[in-house]
Length: 179
Image 1 (spheres, rainbow, N blue to C red):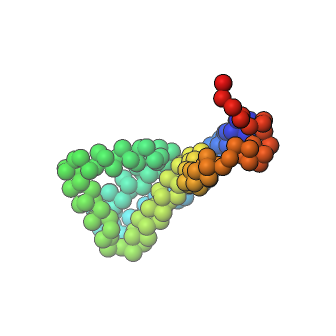
Image 2: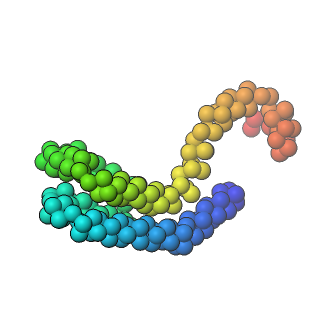
């Protein structure tokens, strides 16, 4: 039991270090990169007036701003809730499909590159936001992976004579008679 408490304390300290030092630093870098992408998109729009007044520019700019302002809320439960909402709402599905087609088929290669990099930044931000859970989930997954082996071992231990079991376990003497 002491090992469990020590293990949980260790993982809690790791989680605290990650969530209070490492993750904010990584998120700040992602935020700065997203601001740079937004500035790059504005430069592309300045160079191409037709693009600046297009629906594609407005939606790409809105997409960058949404990622920029939502970078800290890209967490597993939020994404799962959004997926459920999208699956349940046909209107949202249609709007998303239209927007995605428009953004995936941008005519200007530089704008397309901005879109691709923004997607990579959003995915990285999501990874940074959910990585803190790994300090708890990975040990649990390892435990459940070992559970099958433990069940097999228990079948053997139950079949073992009590004198051998206690001798191997180096514990109290076996009970030879029942009260």
